[in-house]
Image 1 (cartoon, one colour):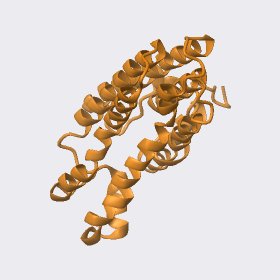
Image 2 (cartoon, helix red, strand yellow):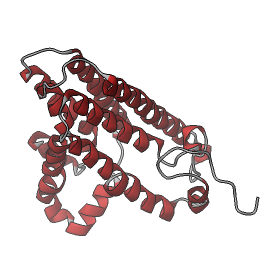
Image 3 (tube, one colour):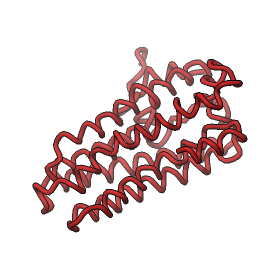
Image 4 (cartoon, helix red, strand yellow):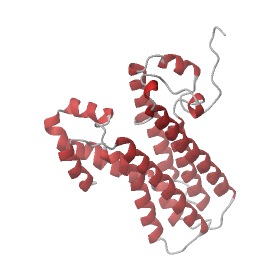
Length: 247
């Protein structure tokens, strides 16, 4: 985190931390895996699942943010605290905070690799794997559809309402939360019951802090017609669009 912070200072762009978010969990998960004295099927499965999820997310965010201005969230922080002191303040507010969050959210991964109550795969593991598949597809497809939509100049200033975005305003965030629900379930399956708090913390952050809630405020201010989209489409959990009241 210190290295990333030092890189961000001359760039005047702390958004580089976003691309490391997924990779950070991969690094922590690999460390937990390497410290494990016994190899079980569940550990290998989760090693693969976290790696696929984290590397895809980091690659997507790096490609999306490369050459772009600093994310609007960090720009607001920079304006609020003043550019002359944000260079050092960002170390604590962004880099230390995200490093701490990675360790907190990774609690289910710790439980998976270090709890040995249930070593054999069980029903909860298969439910967790199903959740991961659903979540990963929602996140990856949602990101792909949004990227493709934004590449078309004709769509500038408009709202994506097709594909997965027809059923939820944030399919990628729903997918992300479902992936972490799956890691919480894997932890429970291994006997790490209390460590699910890490997954619940991630889901709370996605919905109420850094994900859905923050983006909704921005979109309602900047996107014409977004209120109509809000009225017809669920914010988070996918469901069929609501019909207009005058239909």
